[in-house]
Image (cartoon, rainbow, N blue to C red):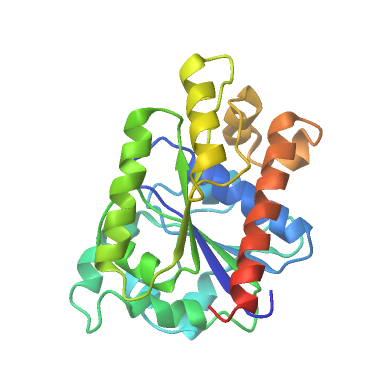
Length: 257
């Protein structure tokens, strides 16, 4: 990647695995030698928790819509090289209301994002499961949006609605892909939907994440998968998924997007 790129993990539906995607993609990117910043924009602070970072921003919420000199003070190093975090804060639940009082409310966070371009090659954003002014900002500053999708018709239908939402509110058109998560190929419906969408729908990434108890243990281990179970199928799946995402961004960057 020749310039900083932004990939956001986003879905208006909760419980689909955004946080595990964000943490593992950010870690795998840093392990590949890419200077990576994970921005935990979800007030629940799950990514911050897993990466052993206290979910607290220095100062008040206004710094988020300010410049790097204030938001940059909240960046925390993790115990893993090349991986830093802007932690969550429960006050982020008020961020949409704050943005609505700003000029250019749907692009205000873009300036904060661009200010990190000298320090990082990749920013991974863990977004709250909502459709809000914060979401509009995420859409406008992202180069790529990854939507974790559980293989069932309702989750896929939500992805379709999300595509419409992105097109309606975005001032730019970020690339958007779905990625199957919590896949159990022993289930007929899961297997059927994978065969249908992975082979025929270009909006779905080729790599998917299997259902696994090792992923569930991330919250107790408080670490990315690779650090405590490096040879598992789930770890390999996230490594392959991250490589696919990085390749997508490299191609879009070289084409001048």
